Image 1 (cartoon, rainbow, N blue to C red):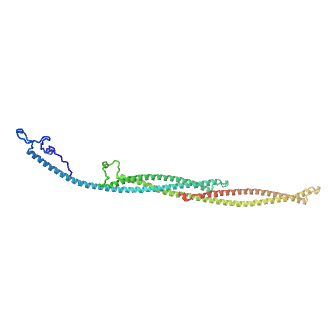
Image 2: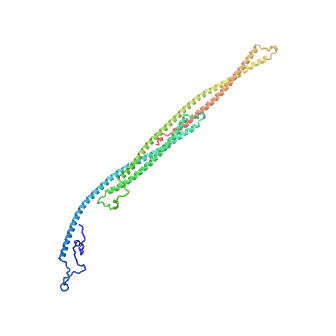
Image 3: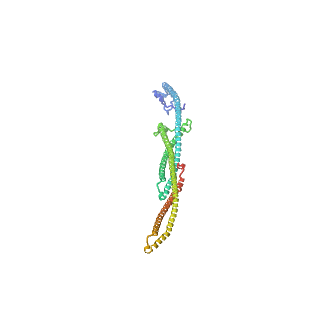
Length: 444
């Protein structure tokens, strides 16, 4: 029971007034009347209370005291009951608040763990995509070498001599290889752009999750710190305004839905990243297989063409050797014909001299006798023989001229085939040995 400061009652008791009992008290500054006697006080009222007044005042005080006591007892009983009830309610409410804070901490920890797991997954996916992007860039750089080789092969084969400047299977395969490399380069560039876009999407989703995780980390700290408060904690304070509901707070359903939406977006990006990585792997494998297959086809076409050139050059060389033999034989034949014609000059002079001398015979001696007929026949035979030999000599010389032309054509064609073979085998095929390996084409 608290102690009260005791003060003097006023001269007029209000409780007595409430019971309509008038109690008179002398004035504060009036001196207490003294008992007097004599003629001075005769006929005047005494300053003392009457017995009725004293009794009334006494009863009033007793009644008021009883009433106050009864009211005080009732208030004390109600106060004890209220204190006990409110103490139990307060402890129960506080325990419920602590329990709910614990449940909230578990829920926040769960979502925070999920956010952390997907943040790490997005980081791993982004790292993998960065590696894939590097591989695509390396693969794109690696295609420059095959493109340079193919274009150099085409430029070198342009310098083939005229007869061999044909659109053969080698040139068709080279042109097909150039087109394939260009399409592969365009595909690699488009895929690289897709990877860059996916990396940006992963980064944005990761930033969203990190912001959500940071908010939940702070909220977890606040709730954990608040959950550790007790009635004996020295760092608790009164914050009356914090008990009012704020306008911008969200509901538990919207709070959970917000994180679920963020996680759903992150999982979509993770799935997209995984699909894109698989697509890039298949694409790099397919493009590498296409390039290596086309390279093999070009190499086979080159090998076949070189075999054809070697075979053609061998046939030309064989034919040239035969032509050279014929040229030698024809030259000997011409020399023999010339010698034969030369050998016919002496008999022709003899027979013509004989005929000339016989033409000088006089008169009747100039007759067509048997010797004359024989000499004339001999002269005609020698003339026909010389003419025949000259004709054959002319034909032999013409044949020799054709043989020489053929020899020069064969030698020229052999040189042409040798030059084409040098371009295809020494220039092109040796240059194609620098073709990138499969691992390089795949970006490793």
